[in-house]
Image 1 (cartoon, rainbow over the protein chains, first blue to last red):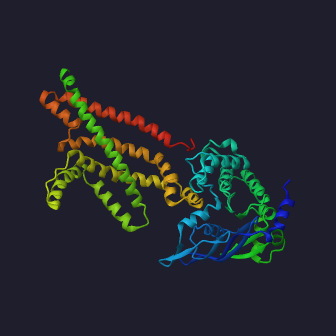
Image 2: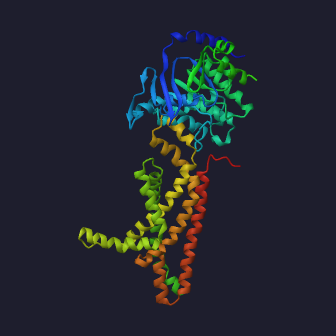
Image 3: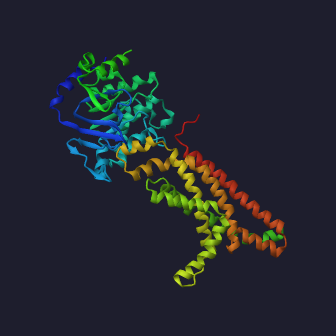
Length: 270
Length: 224
């Protein structure tokens, strides 16, 4: 059913595609504990990068360092070639220009494990708020875009509901629509199915597979091996704050070079 | 009964002042309470520590004492410092004193309410490019009311009743007018009972309005 050929075609053109996101040597420590020990990643347009790793490997922290929800202690992030400028204050790196950060964050739409929809807004308001207040789109245009994205993820009939009235799977699809409505350069998914009941995982994965197939640039921290193998064109396996294994998903999953990744795979394929 | 009818217009003038003071107190007190709550939640110790100290102090002494300090103490300080004779009006002194007390209590109510908004929602705001101010205004502020309104409602009821204290320093409120009427007619029971019923009516009407506000503020909350 799933259009594997389409993914392959998109993947084939990837090296020629412009660079969407370039991350160099990201480091992050909490006190003496070093969570990220220098991680780099170059994502071209249409890349779908699956980031795997056991808990505590730093994969979520890495994702949150990209849009500066966590402040990295070192490293560089470039979005479409634009470097997020950092400066030092009291020995800690902080953004040099918060306006630049807000502008770039709007291009890096994030989907959270706990959805984090705004509870006091209706579904439609959730998908229009950032368009109106961050991108400055007129309300009517934002509403039209929001409606279209809700339809795309299959929850258009819920536009007047509040998030609390929806199932987890519906909430996460609304969250994906909220991200899509921003016309993001890169979408960041932070374990998007980990908080869902097992029977609701597939409705969210299906939406994500469709996005991958249409050529969205995505970074996906996930435990879903099937998604990593079939929808991603690149896989990164994190271990103790470093990239332990990296490559084309099918290849590295079939022939893992590192012992850690081998153990991880055998554990999760039980 | 005839006395009550004769004094009715005077009592209504008093009621007007009482309501005006109560509503002004809440308006000023809400802004003050919100500001104090934000100061308390600040990462900066130089902001949060004084805010805690001031509100703990104000909550720890009788409201009547705060009123006297501001009315009599305020005049004295203004005279000593500015070297001019200034009379603080009872209304202004009452407003300042009651707002300070209201703001101190409200700051705790607001602080609790802010902490009830899940951090992830603010994080989502930041991740989508909202500034810290936009997160406050568009995400946090609209969601604090459903938690804060019951507590603020209690404070409002207290404030309405505390306005009676201000009659002692000469504010022509409902309490003082009732007092005057009671003394000149020698019917204290009738007039005090009447004043009591008016206060009761205000609080009953407030309860209805507050219940509506609370329902409105709770929209989007799953009913279980």
